[in-house]
Image 1 (cartoon, rainbow, N blue to C red):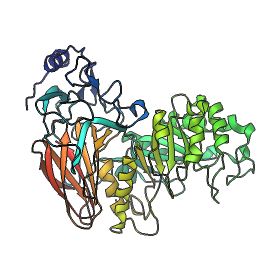
Image 2: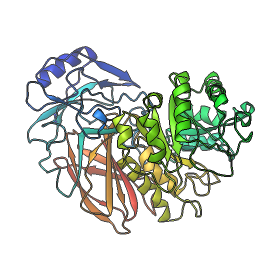
Image 3: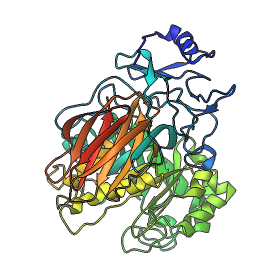
Image 4: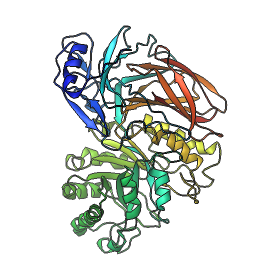
Length: 524
């Protein structure tokens, strides 16, 4: 593999020479390394035609359809929380730093097709921050065989992150617990989204401020959800049940904006705000009942007030399409909704084509798998790995657990990382915000599920083994410059353990997965 260092001024000429066509220099600095965004050239997927087909754009689905080639492309620039060089791959017993080896350039064929044999080139950046040119390593295999075939040129959804809820209705997380949850060093989870509750009374606005502030300092995205409007704005003058008075629609928007402004004034920018937690289920705790039509009216009339703060809706308790579809099918309301959010209690874990067709990201913003047992109960804890695999496979952009610290949570009540926490960390530590899921086929072994991602010039593959016995599969990587993977495993006896290096032979590796485990492979 030939690597040639170039500076910013020489990048355009280097790429033009390598790819055989002119390209204006377009390099972006991002947290200490150069990402080669070679305008009009590095994003091409060359097919030998005069006008080559472009790769799939990142945000979030080209033409509303996952895996369909569209116009334009970009390289994740790490600006939304991607760790500095070497931080991706940090595990319990070591780290996986090394050369950046995801090609952002030409493959041997058009996206979605089997790569042709022969040389192809891509522009990458190394850990010293210098743009380089690498040779994409051909893979002579077939993308239709029974292997886990990863094609990094076919981009699916953007990954916003993985996270959890601060205390909310429980005691707030301590500073040390926030560090454990949102830091990304040894023994930490690497969460990148913190969800906080919007109190119905303004004198409670500061409840989660310390936790949100510390998490934000660690790079987390902050989102917020109300359980009830102020009681005096509701039909029953109570924070439990009832509905929002039509005459109070504007006042409720002002209430939410006041919370956003309070956080902003205290140094915590709010990325997204929800209209209502679980508006479609009647409960005996803090809540408010909404119909789809009421949400449509409120969002249409008040949504424009939120400006750059993204609006999440509707956070249905079981991601009910019957509840959510009318909002997306109303042009005025849909125009104001940035994130289609929901929970998966009892259902709703499925792809959402309507949301994708409208260019909306889909976030799972609350769930816990069960609460009757310890988070360390094995193999029950593996339910988290299974659920995240299914969520990502269904084209969701975010996974947010319920309360971070609970006996059944990511941290147990003493603040110690649980088995469920380590299983989530197999995703959250290595798949950082602004990464993109790429196409991966499922191996013929039905016990194993595979998803794959790219970002910060790395390829990340996560393999779930549901069987209680070790399982052997082939990983075939297409359109990548990677030569090896660092391997990290959580199983009954391991917690994000560094299991060494897996070499790729002509972009293929045969790996044996521990029984009942989640294994993450991070390209070196």
